[in-house]
Length: 223
Ligand SMILES: *Cc1c(COP(=O)(O)O)cnc(C)c1O
Image (cartoon, rainbow, N blue to C red; front, side):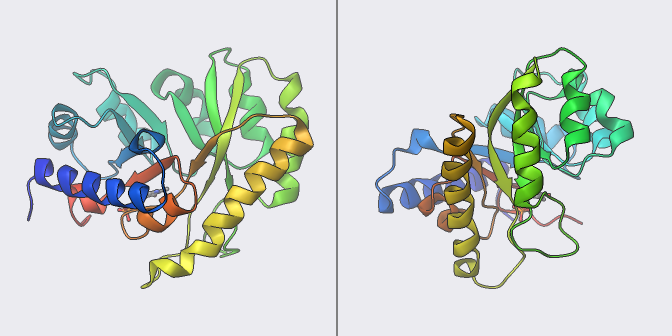
């Protein structure tokens, strides 16, 4: 298995190539290291090797790692959020990618901490996937003006696990088109597209991803 340092270099090279192909500067794409089930030592190692953004799926697990973390990094909540765990989010995270219902949005606003949020869309329509339908997204965006501490930053989606990354391309382009459409409709200027994981982030970058969430390619297979 590669060292974390080598894995980071390989992933950065893959990102650079995809940016090159699509005529985008590398600075357009933020690499988020996904650290579910990765211990704090190895996250620390990745931070030493230059990763500044980490994504966590589970609040309880994240609390153990984030509190007292030795380096200045940013933490992104990317997993499904249970309403009763919402209260921990403002203290732990800088970004939330997985807002999929109004209850979360309005709940989060109550804490008064400025938070950047992305709305998670379920474009693959898989039963097992979380995320809002487009109507629910619009319902949330209608409320944005009444909230005081929420900064709407963009959209997030998860493509189904498939053998061929090309299968995800239509979903990624659909997310980009949806961002443009809702920005126009609601007079917003959201810029972030959080899409692409270890197996398909090149395709996501070609379709406009500004944030890629990469776990396995950096830290190895999860056990
Ligand atoms: C686990 C996870 C990832 C990373 O997946 P890999 O295939 O390991 O790169 C990205 N996004 C979310 C929401 C995840 O849960």
